[in-house]
Image 1 (tube, rainbow, N blue to C red):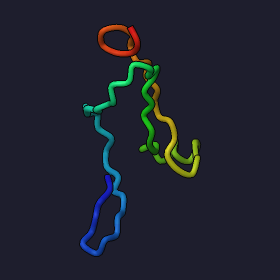
Image 2: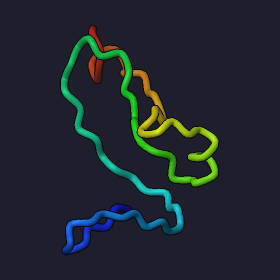
Image 3: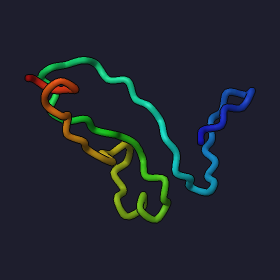
Image 4: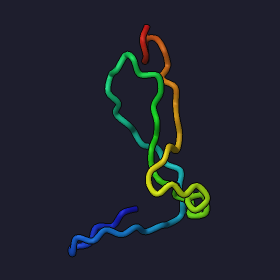
Length: 72
């Protein structure tokens, strides 16, 4: 997690990786075909292996077609 100090400095603290659920709000775009999750790897070994110098694509999900997404 990112920790913000009163001095204005930001540093990262790592703890045990836990499975959790979060929600993402997306724009309603009928032409969307997929959703991409961008970020940095939490596993330091994987981060070194995939070193990109910043955020990278972590996962990609297809937008379902029909009533719940995509063009009909």
